Length: 484
Image (cartoon, rainbow, N blue to C red; front, top):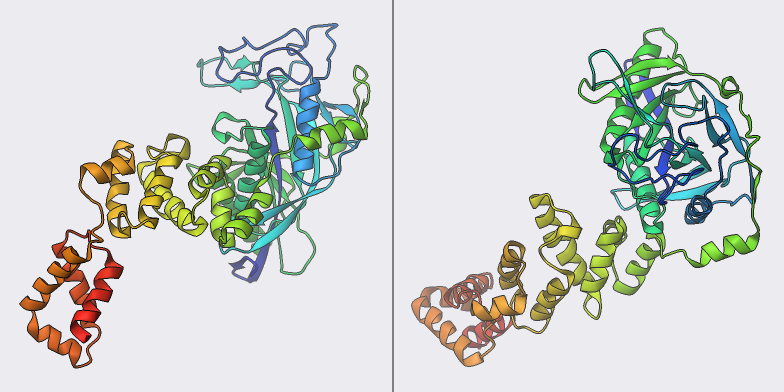
């Protein structure tokens, strides 16, 4: 179902394209040997090339090229065997060269596709227009001194992959699903860590509105949004602003805007320059980037199993629903954890315990899967204890609570606390006889056809055995004794 915003004059549709800057995982920068380590002292990761000292020449980092090709393959995109680095000319205080080395009309990666996993279990394809390599700028800091702005060039020259989507996104939810999936893919590939809070994945959103079925409207670009939640908020707020302007008789100006999450509004930064204003031209210091099929094939051999393939395998091998499989593959660490729990066990039961019990407890404690107090091995052992009737499902929940608190081994917890399920028919029969003797009137009700009372008897027997009796056995023995 399409996402429609109701204006005062009728329905409107949102059209969104996203430009995502992903910082390449590499030890050194795109054109210099300076370190890319995050959090170092300001201006300590700077070579003479990054500082744009006269006569310094860039040398392309082969690892960054490999990482870009790997990402392109992960996006099922066309790899261009010849690409060109261009100079994008603009002046800014944190851009020492006075230009950014980027790629313009000949990027390293062409068109591809991302499959979105929507919350209702449906999927949607979003086209990728291109992926190009470029160097990052430095960082201006305006809060260090009352009179001066400070410049930190640590980020200057760091390799970025700019991944540009087609304008195929139609709602804030789809934008959120796109960023979640893209982040999962680059993390699975090991080409970007996807940490938006550290600035290693940043997003610009191009937003426009139109009447359903009509041509595209004028777009505004919202710059540098640093969380998936804020991107979703910014799209909705900007779309509503545009609808208000158009319905009030105004026109949308193509411009760059900033999203202020505290005030919940977007505001104008500058009118949008067209691409030719940047005076792009091939960088005279860098030859065209040319490689062959053998280079691509080598990288292809290193590709891991990606989220879509893993999801299909979980559904096929473990009988999982599309939704459950999608939740598990959303992060590589979660998928890896589940695989350990499910190995040699009932895949659906393992998924239920991981998604409902474990993820529920971790969310409550605001802890990530990497810091889970319950190891995958121990959760697997707990499932084994249920499967072989050592404990009941109800007791398992109590054991799990202790595991979350202590990180303990479920076998030891069951042993120490005496929680083993009673499967001795003699002991269960004794408990049943006591409950029957104490409630002759209810026995008669069952014999008179009130089958629902059986559940009450099961509950009483379970209560008297501290929840340790095997519920299946209790049910069968009760029927035999009461109904003969």
